[in-house]
Amino acid sequence: MNDPEGSPVLGGGTITEGFGRITVARTGIDTSMLHKGSHSASYFDVTRAAGEGVEIVDFCIPCNPYFPTPEMFDELTRDLKSILKYYPSDSATITKKLASVLGLHPQTVAMANGSTELITWIDHLMIKESVAIPIPTFGRWTDQPMETGKRVDMFPLQERDGFRLDLEEYVEFIRERKSRVAVVCNVNNPDGHYIPRRDVIRFMDALSDLDLVVVDESFIDFSDAERYPSVGPDAVIRPNAVVLKSLGKNFGLHGIRFGYMLANPAISGKIAKMLPKWNLNSLAEKVVHMIQEHEMEYEESLRLLSRDRRSMGRELQRIQGMTVFPSQGNFFLVKLPNEWSGVALRDYLVANHGIMTRECGNKLGMTSQFMRLVVRPAADVDRLVDGMMEYAQRFHSRSAYDSDPLESAGRRWAEPAYEEQPDNLIPYPGHRGGGGDYTARRAAVG
Image (cartoon, rainbow, N blue to C red; front, side, top):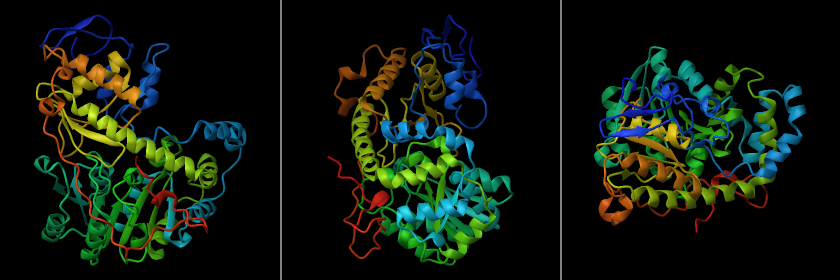
């Protein structure tokens, strides 16, 4: 039995998909759940659908796999009763604590129930007519303003350029369309492209006459291209700039739903006044208080993730016909070989190997030929590559590992060369008198 897109629908037995018969249903997961809605199925939906004892490996949700540490989870477990039983402090109190931990002025910070809540309020309060956004990117930046009737000016990134954003061309596009708000995601999701800090600052200054310039830095902590990659300190001294941060992604705690924005006090205060008084839960408050004590562990998690990103990139490049785009995020964008189907591969991996992946066919500016794969430890990557190679057997008589990866891989994009950081930029503040840099300091990548 096939679904309308020709990918396996499980119920046992075998299916035929043009290249021979394929055994399915090793996990017992009904892949029809993956075809509902515009977003990926949740991890909980997939695990509930899996057979008993099936371990799900998540290459779909971009989450830090090394943080919190097991010891931190033990601490959270010990305090779980009080965390769930009692009201949290109000959002202003939690925000003040977060600002203290990060070395930020509290009047420049607004903290919310995830970055998507902030995107919603930015749309309602700050976007009056139109917004420009490069695509592909995080879907809420296009979906949210369209839902409220705003004009969304989409600037298409080109595959031939490796989906790299040319800021000068983007500014010209904004001027031509007369967009009143401009958004840029750095690091961008799903391609992992990073824009040097000095260039983002120039971008903000070039558009100082707009209603708002938003820099979404949800994934910037995973970048190791520069020592101080964030433009947060630069945004708060500009009249129309906002920087967004996603703590759930950075700290590996998507379920808590917490993020924050940085802007001058007039903008951050306007957003903060609209947020509910108790929009943050007790678990978020507990984690904010734990961060300061676990800075070293967090920095080590970023170092390990950078190591895994390099290793995973090399492994993916060995798959014949696959294009792997360079990334500074905790994920890779890949273009599958021509004969592969992203929808069928996604379904095949979860049905036969318990591997969740993100097929990008429902992302504006993308097709089902692209997938976003989250960076994970080597053992998980081996499982992913084995599943892909097994899927590839229907198309190729020999393994891609039989040939030189430099010859057999698809088009390979070179890592961009980032210029040396000038010494006159505002240093990202540390939260300790001894000069600790917390999220700004990039651990040395060895």
